Image 1 (cartoon, chains in turn red, yellow):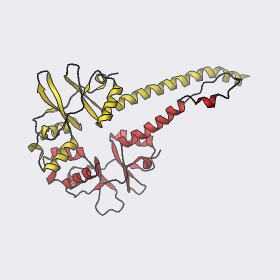
Image 2 (cartoon, one colour):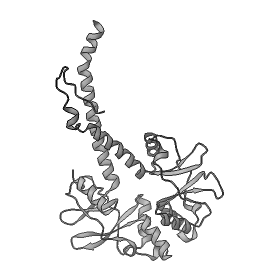
Image 3 (cartoon, each protein chain N blue to C red):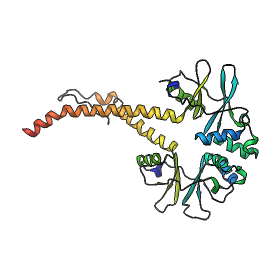
Length: 161
Length: 158
């Protein structure tokens, strides 16, 4: 399963010179925990940074300044880990784990912003795979077994994996 | 496995009367997204609310106030889901799901705050079970291979 199938779109963005309070209002309006920061006027929207609730809070603590006096660029996390839209689920998880990030912008071959993927998006994909695997291991319905009248070969246990 | 076996015993908390700036400082230092808000009772600290980074940021926006002007009790989520340490992990997952929350304070049978259980703790637990299951399947497969080996050898030598 490719990340492009799992990531959230549309993805909401902020700009480095934008007032932090406006960016927070945007996060709240769309009920998202993060915005991808891109340069104003960049048609491809290449990610420059990421802005989360925690960045907003810790940025204020670090700079001893209030939300209403700061810009997005003052507190964003720069150079975020970006995932290739064509990356497979396992590869994306390994990459995110290696950088200890729970969310990452997803980009195309031209570094253009495609979406954002979070740990919360990846878990249902794995849960779905598990559900299908569990269904595979479940006993077959009776009607499929009724025809087996004569056992001519030793019984071979079926492996589910 | 019970919630008490799994929860994080290191409780990051502030008192209800603490300024939000104190909670913010604590969250950043301890690298957590939420703190338990407590009130002193005869039997010890009691969890009366939860405060997340988002609660703080949203409150700042709503109230146009800076962090030192607000108290934890002003903006916390009141009446939090509180779990007993002796309930099974499966029940904890149900309860968090029912309340749409990602974490809950954990109390002992005597009502004492003993830890916090989070989505991450539960995910790690479930993943651990799955890993153990995969190891079981792997051991089983290797077991079959060792049974199959003699017949393969016979086939090649004959």
